[in-house]
Length: 86
Image (cartoon, rainbow, N blue to C red; front, side, top):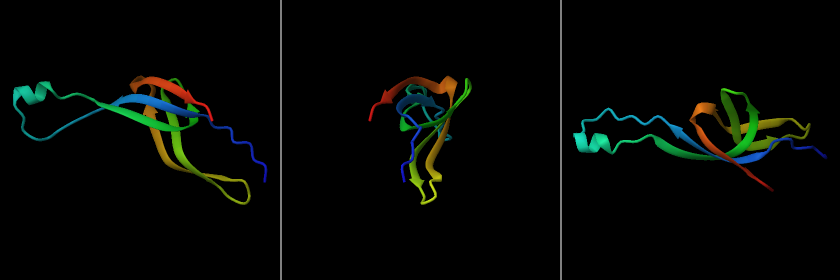
């Protein structure tokens, strides 16, 4: 079956909320930062507000794609996106 795969692969650097419910000194609190995340995935959909990616997929015998390892990231959290050629 010759199926055209239309999704592009990207390396995405983004920031996420980091929280801690434990007790901390002011020094420990000052060292607290957001999570600096890196995701590698295929762009499923992109709007001005969000990006949907997936990292795994399966194509069945009828040509239907099933998506796995799915993530939705707010666009405002994305720092850089680098296209991976392949």
